[in-house]
Image 1: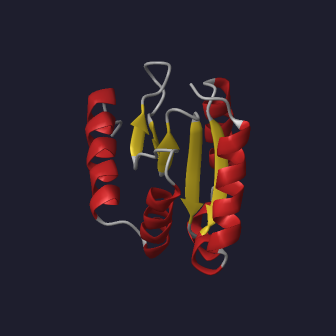
Image 2: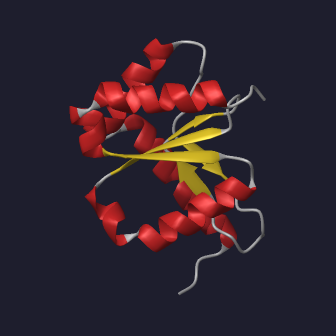
Image 3: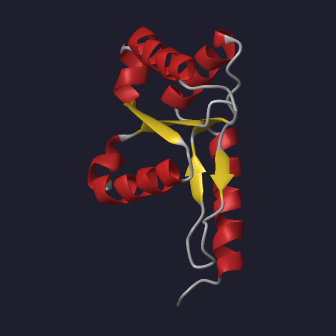
Length: 128
């Protein structure tokens, strides 16, 4: 049975709320580190509505509206969703939003390098 756009929207809003209340260990670690960066305010998670009425909204793990920068923390399931993630990133790019992707391992074991990449992206992106 096909879901209505309203039902999909409600499901994704509830899912985004669950993501905020129950972040993965990597998301929690990155959120705490981003809060300490100062100056580049990130929100999490953010539901971006689809442009067309038949397009599903997207949930971004972390989003800086001032920098138009989306930061995604990908678990192991994303290796099976490369095509879908690519289409999503392309759509976000067309909306003027740059996407950085990091694995859970990047955040958990290479946090300083992850933050350096985010800092660099924020510094090269002009303010809103």
